[in-house]
Image (tube, rainbow, N blue to C red):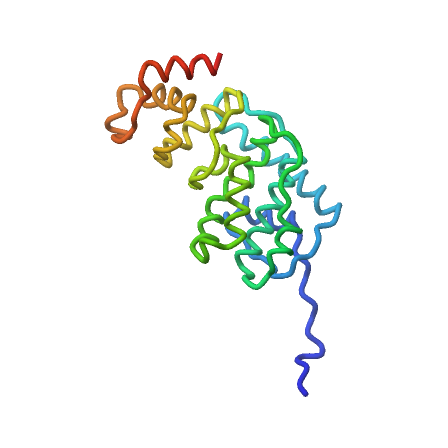
Length: 227
């Protein structure tokens, strides 16, 4: 009986810091199909890398970006990496998925939302890949549920909740993302709608012909929410 090559070199374990490096530098990744646990040294190196990237990315944010939250950033890197592995390897069971795709277990403030976004901004692409392969796949269900927790990062996933974190930089950036995607559903969210009206100004008809500004009563309600 042929048991296959006897001297084949073992496959090198994929590191999380290697995954994040590829993602941030090239926007594409090469993944291992093997779910190998990430070691503490690897997780620490990933946090250090994401902190450096945070400093660079923050320079492109409006106003002053939130501080860095290493726990949220590293969690998001792990979640995205594992989700991509489950997209790639279709025969992994739902129980294994539940073991590896853990929800974030701390309050999500401005720092957590922005730090996680360094990786989670790629989640809509992964979601669309998974949904294209199987709309009823448990992975799609899990990612939809997580999108509800991270609306700042998940424009393009239709079930995400309203972004309610009161941070000037994130609110402006969120409105910019809605405008870039021309997401009509999210443009109806009161606070986002206010910022979109300010951003579009007199050019609304040219820049976004389908944009619907809120009426006076809704605007008053939105202002009361902001203040």
